Amino acid sequence: MSSPRSLRNVETRKKKARRAIPRAKTTRTQGNTAAGRTRLKKAAGLRRGAKAKA
Image (cartoon, rainbow, N blue to C red):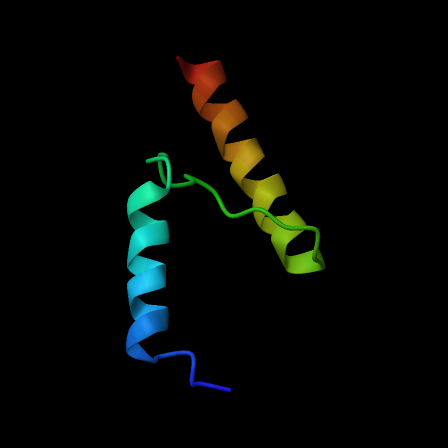
C-alpha cells in the first residue's frame, strides 16, 4: 500500500481537481450539530434583520 502522497496519487488528485465543476464557495457553515445549528440560527436571524431594514 502506497502513501496517500505518492506521486501517482498527487497526479490523480490534480486531474480530479481539474475536472471538478467550479462552484461558488459556501457563504455560511452548514451542519446538524448543536453548535452548527446555533450558528445557522444566528446567521438566519441576522439575515432576516437585514432584510427587514432594506
